[in-house]
Image 1 (cartoon, rainbow, N blue to C red):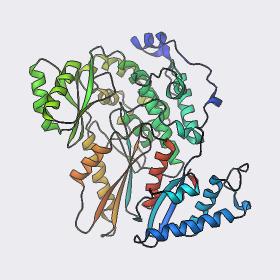
Image 2 (image 1 turned 135 degrees about the horizontal axis):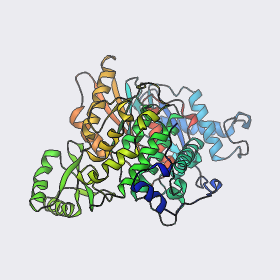
Image 3 (image 1 turned 180 degrees about the vertical axis):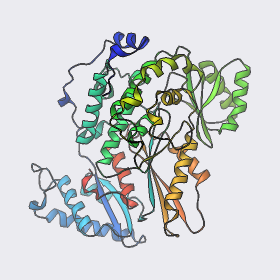
Length: 493
């Protein structure tokens, strides 16, 4: 049984936990209501051919009229207190009728709508896609810097998501966490979500909840990848570590991050690893410390270093007209700045391997490619404290991990019939689609069309900053339906 009581934490971790006095105790979970307003529904669309969208609209109009006239006794899936003529009930009937009409035909699309009128007026029908059995599902977990207050709030209307966050919050309480997960994510008047002690465990809890939600809709990955701290949730989804272990790694990571004394940060740069070296060499000549902390794609890196080094790098990149953007972190992760807390981090995670008693074997059928090594990683490695110290200290080799996942996708579909499309369904689970561009760049450089075969990267992100989380999540579920993977979407929305 794993424990992470405050009194068992070594050194400064004990002092850190005692000094935090702003615990928001006694939050009434009944306050955590789903946001007001109608929730969009995922409407499956089908066609025997891709060529006549006008017929689709006419067919929808007919089916909507049929749903409006339908006997309310058939509304077993709807809330018994709902108005039988309400938009929500009519859309529920429509979805059932579409499924009964044979939505599993060759060409599929989807729409999101909160009312029949919105559905008919919508210009946002997804393109019709030919269904294929050739698909590989890959979950990609965002790292630090993409967090935001209220991330995922609209998903609280789903019991699975809410219960998952509640379970994680209870575990953090047991570990001696001095703040409330729900309060910091959704209620605090002065949000602290950008503080490492808060965002590290909060983002991991969010990613676990997102996974629990879409798994409840029968979406399961063949491959998982994590960028930096995103590997914590990836290891959980692989089955290598328990929920408690994942939250422990993230919680302690946040605590030790407060004690990195050197001022520093991280800078995303639109250059590849070799192309950025002249900039870093000039910065080092001025006596500043800067290294490549992350290789995100063949055309994108993240620089880690002193504040002065980042400022000098920004000036040089401005002069060259190269894209760059500060990452929303206050430390130079994946650099020598981490060395001063490495021993404490390792000690605080001592026993992690033997404590993961819920995991009895060295794996599941989920493959994880490590962004620490770029190679496939065993479950036993992910239960070693040293792995997570290196994950905080060493370079992130995200591009190499993505290439590994793409190679696996190629191998998985190589034996299938030639001439069909292969869909690599890459879904980002995190607060924001921060990895969308690196994923597409890596795909373009490594996995284009092959003779007699077409491969498509189908990217989706469950969340996006300041967008309705139900809508973004259902958009991704619609992609799974389009490509022939997802279970009947009547369970969604």
